[in-house]
Amino acid sequence: MKTFKDYYAKNVLGIREIIKLSDFPDIGELKTKVDTGNEAYNVLHGVNIRNNNNQVTFTTAENKEITLPKIDTITIHIGSGVKEERPVVELSFILKGREYKNIPFSIADRSENEEPVLLGEPFLKQTNTVIDSKE
Image (tube, rainbow, N blue to C red; front, top):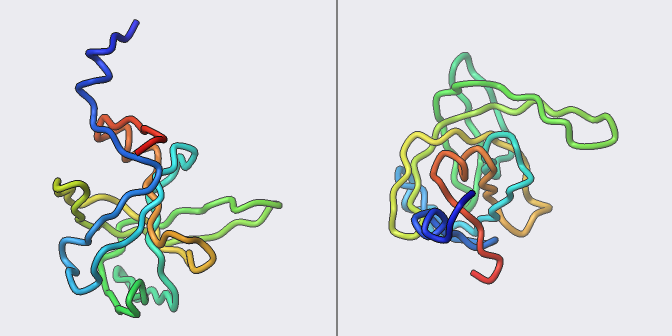
């Protein structure tokens, strides 16, 4: 059984946070949704996605074009039997003053979402994080 002390030692995030991409400081602060229901990779907004061998180029927040090595491809079931293939890249970012390096993100169009970034359950587990809905 977990005690209060067990939970107290964990990182605490709110449902919405702000991150800054370490390698792309000119993009600025990015609104981020923390989603315990997302069991796949984290997601970064990207449009005009182009795969070229082991590289992926896309346009993200602030209309910034980025090219990164593609480390994987993931198939996401987005509902009603629809599947979407997404490239996966590694990004480093700063969240609440702490830098996280080489974290996997799939790239997808999040223009319909309020937040261009989604942090999912695998990242939360890896970083020993709990969510405080009041934060």
